[in-house]
Image (cartoon, rainbow, N blue to C red; front, side, top):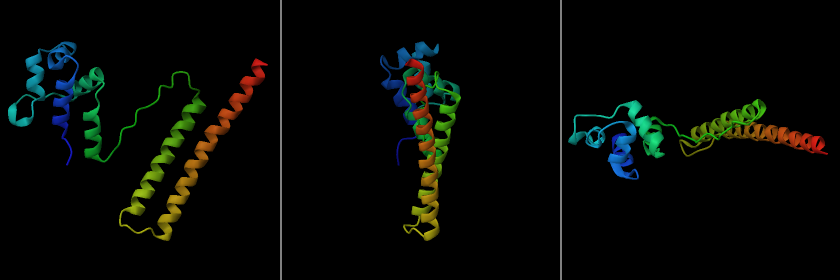
Length: 155
């Protein structure tokens, strides 16, 4: 079994450039207090709170704790792209692709769970894969149109 949440938070704090003292200063805490809060359970009664854990991950850029939490709960975290300048249509396409990808992953995992793929499971994975491909083609079609419009407007 991999690391647990407290272990990863401990290592995030101690692996921070400048160590726990430097990170604690950014959190507005004393270094010794932060060290006690993230010390594995056998070593301390103090515990870092959820908001502190989030701040630690934000400041350090180290997201091991997030990934351990996700793994423990059966999820996976994927970094979101910066979409400040993206159109609503693009964001909508990307959301659809993400949903369809999740559907493919779920259908494939269910189908593969017992080591045998039935006709119904194969059909489900094929259907979900087709929907994913269709959502990608929809995004590409929109981009082709935007590209052509940009060329017309510039010419």
